[in-house]
Image 1: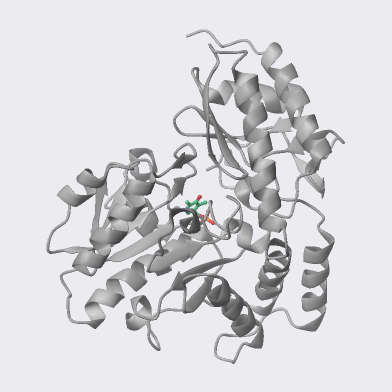
Image 2: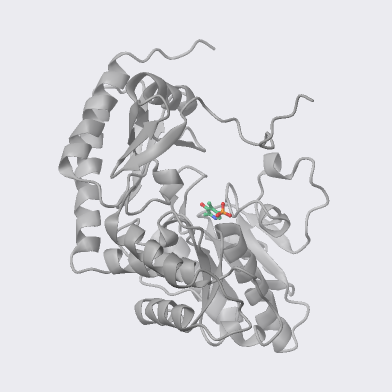
Length: 395
Ligand SMILES: *Cc1c(COP(=O)(O)O)cnc(C)c1O
C-alpha cells in the first residue's frame, strides 16, 4: 500500500506545528514560526487565547452536544448577537464555510421557489471566486482546476467577470435568482470589489427582486476592521455566509439572512446534526466578546493601516519584485511581479515567517487580529531579511 493514511489531497509542507502561542506556532522540533497566515484567516484571536480556551473548556465540562431536536439557549443567544450587529434577522449555524455558502445558495433558491418563481434558480457568480469544495460550491466557481475529476457540475451558476457590473448584467435573464460574490476575494488574490460594483449589484437586485448573497467566509468577522466587509460599502446583502474567523479555530460557520430572504427556509427544509451545538456556540460567543469589545475594530483598522504604509514604503525598494499592496484592515495582499509561491516558501523555510500564497501572484498577509507592535516589527525584520536573500527561480 502506498497511499498515505491522510488522504493525499493537500501538498503538505514540512512545517508540523504542535503548539501555538499568541501569534507564533511551534513545530514538533521546536522551531518557532511567526504566524501571518492565521490558519487562513481563522485564528482571529491568535493561538492560546485565554477567553476562547476558557469558554470552550467551561462549555465542554457542562454540555458539548445536543440535537437540534431540542431548544437551544446557546444558539439563540449567539444568533441574537449576530442579528443585533448585522443586517440579518435570522441565522443558520453550520460547521464550515462551504456549508454556510451551501445554506446561502439554498436560501436564495428557496426564496424564489416559495413565491412560485420556480424558474429563478440561477446565481451569477464571479471569475476567480472561491466558495468551498462541496459540489454546489465548486459549481459556483469558474475555476476549472477545482472541477477536474468531479464532473458533472451542479447546474444553476453563471460566471461573470469579477468587479465588472456590465458582465453581470449581460448574464441576467428569466432564470436569474441573484448574485453570489466575495466583497474581497481571498483565494483569488485579496482583490476588493469596487464601490460601484457592490452598489451596482445591490441596485440590480433591488430592481429585479434578486438575492444579493455575500460570501464573507474569509473577509468577515472583523478581519477588515468592520464586523463584515459589506459595511465598508454602505450596502446590505440579503444573505451572507460567514465562517473561518467566527469560531477562532473551532469549526463554525453561519448563514445570515433577512426575514424576507429566509421565507423559503421553513420547518424541515434544511438541517445539520452538529450545526450550532453548544460547544461551537461557546466558541462563537467568545470570539464575538473579543471583536465587539470597545475599540477592537478601530485597532484592527489602525494596525492594518500601519502595516500597509510600511509595506508600501518597503516595496518601493524592490520595484522588480513587488507590484502593489491591496486589501483592507488585516486582510492584505502583496502582489508580486514574479511568481509569489517560491517567495512564500522561502519566507517559510528560511525565515520562519508564515504567510499564504493566493491567486494573481499575491502573498496573503493575514495575521491574527490581536497582533501586537512587537510582532509587526518582527514581521518586517523577517520580510526584509527574506527579501534581501531571495533569489527569483529561473524560468
Ligand atoms: C475558505 C473559504 C470558503 C470555504 O470554507 P471551508 O470552511 O473550507 O468550507 C468559502 N468561501 C470563501 C471566501 C473562503 O475563503
